[in-house]
Amino acid sequence: MTFPPDSPPSPPPGHALDRPAVLAALRARIARLDRSGARAAAGDSLPLCDATDSLPLCDAIDQRLPGGGLARAAVHEVLAADPGAAAGFCGLLLARARGTVLWIAAEPDAWPPGLARFGLSPADLVLVQAPRRQDALWAMEESLRCPGVAGALLAVDGLDLTAARRLQLAAEAGGAIGLLLCPDTGEAGGATAALTRWRVGALAGTASGIGSAHDLGDPRWSLELLRGRGARPQRWEVVWRPALDRLDLDDAGVEADERDAEVETVTLHARRRAR
Image 1 (tube, rainbow, N blue to C red):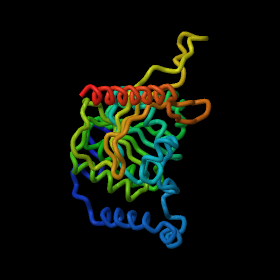
Image 2: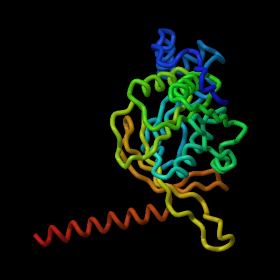
Image 3: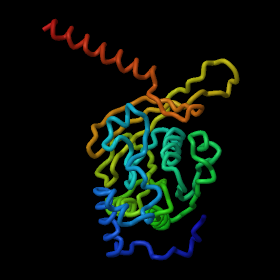
Image 4: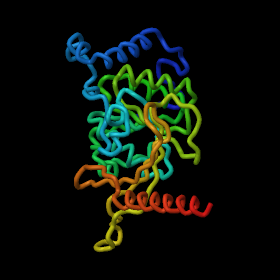
């Protein structure tokens, strides 16, 4: 899907948030507070992608997140310390949204066969080429607002609070999960309207050295939760196991963290004794 460079979509970019959109967002919030009553009143009209409130990552991480996972009907930022690792992480999240998802960028570089390794079927993926920033923002907003869309990703250098809030309202209205894939500047970043902000980096694969020299093993990532409403910042080392369709804490990383903590404790006690 490509927007013609000289033909902006309708409605025109920069239009004011209309009253029906605000009302739709408020109704979505009320529906999540009383889902049983909302479903009884709305019947089958509720968004298909809003069957649960959150997407699971893995048990150890889900326990640290409000709602037991990554919230749907919300926008989340992903800072790409490593572009390949961040794309894989986003592909995993979109796959777990279970439905049609959009990948929106000026020049979409998502590789469907590669994302399939993370459970995202190419049949569910729609690549949207939007060279102009206002076109990309419009496509993202309309996608999140659409009940037939399970999730949408926007590759962007950064967003101001006004644009981010518009996307958050759209996600609340439609029930989809929104991802903002941004380059990592090495800092936690400023204020954001996104529900969470993550930094994703790559770690060495799990290859044993036996077999093909091109086999890098299961992908290993560093996941760092920089900001999250109701969650404390934390870092995990994880491994994605394609054969099991499962994200696990990396045992080697856990052991290394435990060793570091033990060394830090011993060093602290030694300093106290030296005093």
